[in-house]
Length: 98
Image (cartoon, rainbow, N blue to C red; front, side, top):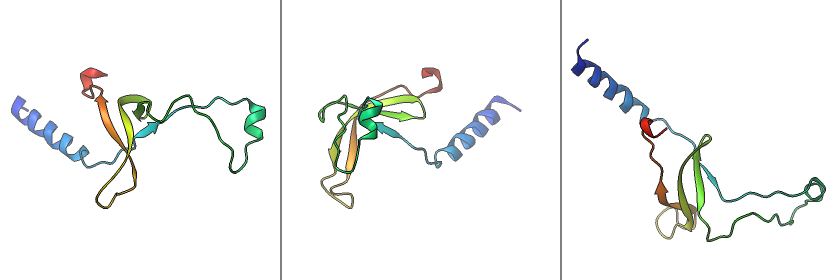
């Protein structure tokens, strides 16, 4: 197989994967309650996180940090009122950036 054929086959394979959905986890903060405090939680309890509303959130695919963003509320269109993330930093996602 020549180099041009290998490149063409690689592009077809890459294109096939572009339609596969992935899950992105958005981490807004962490809580570290004592076990006794955790056992006392009930509906209406407040669990304090280690971040503030204006702090950046982290975006993960699996255990890999892919970027940072800020939480916003969509203001128009079908998603109006829905929570969303505006990306402010995207990590290098290329295979060489692993």
